[in-house]
Image 1 (cartoon, rainbow, N blue to C red):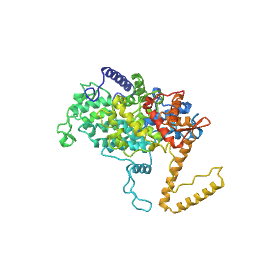
Image 2: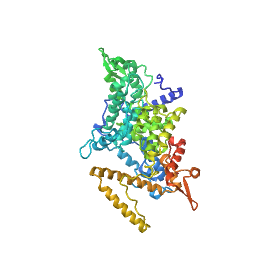
Image 3: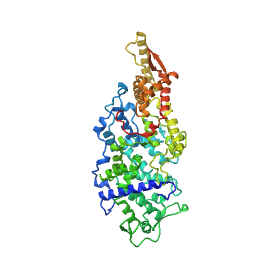
Image 4: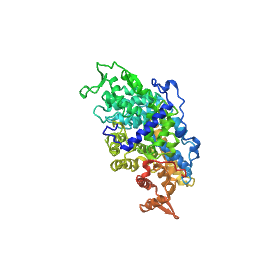
Length: 607
């Protein structure tokens, strides 16, 4: 790959890579049969995959032994890697305050999350969510009259890049959501990038490759079978267009074997019967009239044609360790070569067969959750923080992230050096943190998400939600006098009279809106009961996943005072309700400037 202009490695990095690949090769030969067989589908054979040693999963007892604040951080490290987030109110009992946070009994544990990622959505639920995402122009109301359902998100001609992000956001934790996320991650790696940036590929290659990969992962198709199918695809040939280029890249990408100048000409010879047509003919995969008729010795095995070569790659002992290595290098970016090699060996020793097994081993490992620090990608940070803030997503947010179009153009990932499903060799392992890339990252994260109080104000309990009409009379308190009680009776009578005017369909919609309003009011009242210190901690936990330091809290409260957000009674400060949203916006603006929120952090056992 060093010959490609889009990826440049230093000489030292190249030596380290080759040393690591040599170690991985030795590991793979120790745990695999030397003679490659045909690709095996784990769905047909079953799997007893388990990880021990260096990549062993974090146990439930280890998680339970952590302080509640650190449990929250660990849970969100896992969830944000999946582009999800756990809101403070969903994890902690706000009615108990935040001075000594108490975890809710129903808050998800690591085993809960793992279990849910393995459970598929039922067909009706998935269909309902997809209709919410895309809309339904043919929808009807309860009377059978046309009532088109407006789409929640806007898509343009780059819809294949946008739909996975929308589904990951809207699907609950499930096998469906996990499959979407795994396929999206893989299509951004060197393993399966559709390479839309080059002239022979286009958005249909993105669509077809992603869809084929997502369905295969969801159906528990083995890694070997997926690689076998992908090598034969037109999308693969549009990425690597000649027999020599294609075979060389398959050896390098899927086996991690570089500088195989003795093998490549022979592999190219057996694949000479295939070629990619030119632009005028639509870049189609075609056959010549001259198939190879003499077996060639490639990587120690005789092959006659391209199918034989692709089978050799897909069944080779180096394939699984190499795939694990590519993923480990991303998720454990920054860890030493020795650590990453041990992680690959530990996962490979369990004989994983599917991508789900490999990803699960990585994400739930103690080494990842507790001991790894790396920069967060924009998706990890933006989408996870949006979930914790319960941000009401803009309809064009994913269009903005993938194409820079619409009102969400500030979130364009290409401007951050992080385009999706575009690069010929996939995204690099490290998140681009040069001045220009990070400036665009920070701008999109801060302006589109953190400062948009009208999209998180009500869900976060910072703005009082408006009651649907008819408005529910405000409940009397225990100290109400006779006049107030009489007024309440009159308001209640008028309310019931207004309800009686609603038609059955209107009443059904009203009841739905009322239930949502009641949920919002519960959050509002719980947040309203927090004192100033706790309110600051609530906001810090929502973004930085930690409580504020004393010096931060004192400094911010001083600014609140200067801005008139507080009132003082008997030397105690209280937040003015009509300024709570502005106070929150100020805190989130401060948090946007902290380097730590752009990183997945190591565990802090003192939290």
